[in-house]
Image: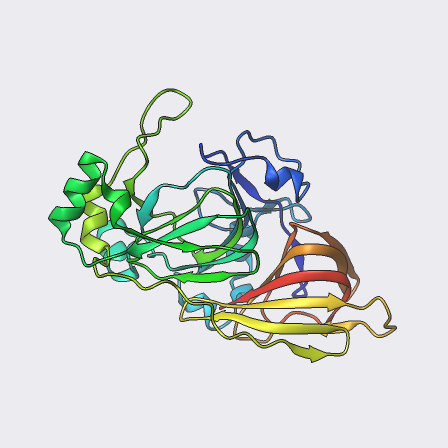
Length: 325
């Protein structure tokens, strides 16, 4: 089989803080209310994406063709896809939480840790995120503040606007604020240690579980400065422009602005032997074609492109996040 691209069908999560924008803005047509997260590229057992042209999950496809991951990515997660890509609609505040690093997660949870990147697709005026603490704190101080409800006074808040990006390293206490629409790229992990949840209850009247002890074991308790936006440079080529958003040990993310409306020659695209690529359309629409394959993509669609792919051509007017390892 040639290493051809595959369009994916997302898995949905109906967490209590979600809204309706994932259907309203991306026309995903998924029956979830609230619709908090769409896992658009995932082999994690808690939410696997589906490959409709193959009639199987992405995880099953990669097990059949482990070479699709590429030489680097195949050694990261025991032959599993090492990243997970989500669309997130935060109609309400997310819980204050923290994720462990790989060493802690492997030792105690038999899992990868979780470093993640947020790219802000939209944000209502006044939207904030929580990023660490506003002063140095101790475990005992944080524990008391959770129990007496004063923890919000210790948290560092930063404003958020459309087109911002944030790298949230493992160990950073954080929360997405109400009013954010976000694309998240992360390690393939679903480990979340919930530190504080505003005393909310779910649809059954139950409070969600807190993980205070584990959270305090892995959290960075030093004060955090406001996260700064990195320098970003658009590089222009015929038919598209691109900019590097994030490069870390776990993933690389580029934003691609595709515009072939006045071109006869389409934009070439292929992957090397090092890594697969995942193309998430965050605006507009277009097509990818090559070796007898033709895929139309629309806002919210994600395309998995195996390593050593066939020579492809991109066409359309769209913004894409190009994710690799």
